[in-house]
Every structure is written in structure tokens, then in C-alpha cells.
Length: 323
Image (cartoon, rainbow, N blue to C red; front, side, top):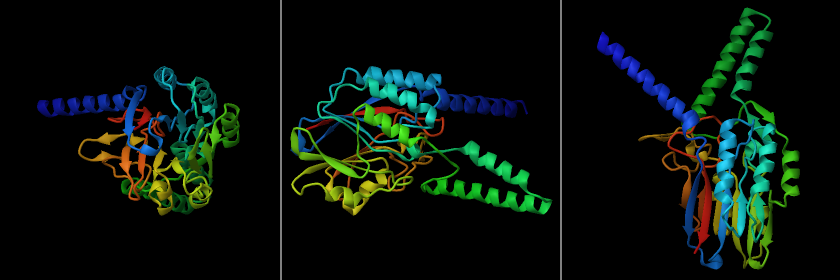
């Protein structure tokens, strides 16, 4: 019996330690992930890629992470800065977005961005359960309460099943102020490419295209790429990497994306619990990917997270040298 109690205590302490590490151990860290990409048409180009800040309330983890990010990128001299969405967790993060934009290093050829699903809305587990409580409270009879409880538990079961199957998630949405975010990007000279493309200054044969978010926006990939001249080389920005596997994306030689957060929690032997996408494997939900149509894609692990956990998947900023 004493051995059993010792085992249970040790297991509980180990679990508490791992949980604490996932909450406060990796999340304040920030790494610079370098890549060397072979793409001869634009050899020599240096690109800084930032994604999935998920800025929200001004807590100590966010302050540390933002400070470390700015310290990492200040000394860099990129030609291009690419921002692939999910600036916001909720509207309280607009102040941190402005701090990041103020701290970006000069980019000789400009700063370009697309929006992510969280820039439009917050997905709230708290709101999900509060809505369940409200529905039960408003039910007029015990029979109706039972029906509501059955319905809400069924919705939770369907959500858990979508997580298990690694399907896209959408639930309990609370609108974010995407208009204010868009205005802020414009103030700081960021080219917002939601379903549009434009040539890169001083590089007449290089274009950057960007599409709206796949879940909360209205992406028009075909229409966006149709505006690019036939002899141009294309960099495509899409928050959700699923769009890079569409046949129309074959027009792009290099794709930058985020959204998966690298899985956030990577379990040994099992991979990511959930990747927020459907086309990348749980075993490798971020990094460098050769695409079926011959292009190349980099998916960032992101700077923040949608739920407050990271395990074996620290946040990152991406630095690319094209050779």
C-alpha cells in the first residue's frame, strides 16, 4: 500500500510539473529559426516571417515574449517582412500589435500581411460553457433542461471528435475589431494583401500575393493570382497552409503560412494533439515543405498560442535566406 501511495504521489507531482512547464516554461521563450531556401530567380533575398502573435491581455508572458522578439529582430536587415495573420487573440492585444509594428526593423522592399481567423473572432471555451449554463438556466421545465443538457453535451462530444480527427475548429465566436487592426496596419505602412497581389519594388518580375483567411474570411485564390503577369515569380501569403495545396496555388514558387502553431503540444511518439489544419501531418505540423505542384512552403510555429500551453514546441520567428 505504501508503494502504491508513493507511485501515485510521484505520478501526480510529475503531472503537475509537466503541466506547469507547458503553461509557463516554453511560452515565454522565443527562438529564431533560420532557413536557406533554393530559389534562383530571387537569390540573395532575405525575409523575416512573423506569424500568430495572438496578442491579448498584457500579462507577463506576453511582455517577455514581445521583448525577446524585438531583441531578436532589431539587428536583422531583411529585404522583406511577411506577416501571416492572427495578430490578435482579442481586442486588448491591439496595443501590443502597435508595439510590434513600431519595433520592426527597416525592410528595403516593404512589409506585407494577411489576416488570420483570430483577427476576425475569438474562439472562447469560456463562452462555450457560459452559453451552456445560460441555456440550462433559461429552460422552463426539468424535461426541457434534460433536452438542453443532452444537446449541449452532444455539441461538446462533436467538438472533441473534431479535435481527435484533426478537423478545422469553429465554436463560440466573439467578434474582434478587425477594422481597427486593419487601420493600424495601414498607419504603419503595412501592405495588407487580403485577396490581392502587387509587384515588389525594384523587382519587376517578383510579385507578392495574399489571400483572406480560409475559415473566417473569404479567400479568392484564383482571382488573386490571376492578376499576376505570366512571367512573374510569386510569393504567396496565406494564414492557413491548407490553401497552399490547392491546384491554383501552383502559380506560387514560395508560400509562407502559420495557423498550426506547430501543434503547440507535441507528445512523444504521437505528435501534435491538434494542428488547426487538415493537410499537414500531426508528426510535422510546421517547418519546410516541398509542395506537390513544385513550390516550397514554410509554416511558422508562431509567436503565440490560442490555448495557454506549449510543450516541445517553443514559439519562433522565421528568418529566410534565398540562395
